[in-house]
Image 1 (spheres, rainbow, N blue to C red):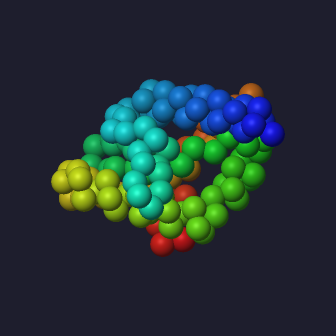
Image 2 (image 1 turned 45 degrees about the vertical axis):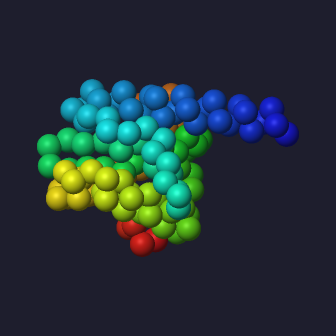
Length: 121
């Protein structure tokens, strides 16, 4: 059981790294990785131009599985962490912010879905 959890944790970290570099190649700048707040966590926080994106990375077998895996409860927790980040980062608070998903699926380049969910979930 613990071994399965460790394997999933490693897969998640690898997917986050893959997603981060794919976005960096598209001109995004990393602000935080695995940002933890009291209410939740955001996998990646990145900025490009005047947009700050709070990004959930999902490694699944299919794109649909990845998109459906962000539950309303999880969206609320991500939004709560995003609010805390914006309280600490004036630039993010003054810019457009959104919630994105990067789906990492086998044998495909990571798929970046902008405005994938609402923060109020």
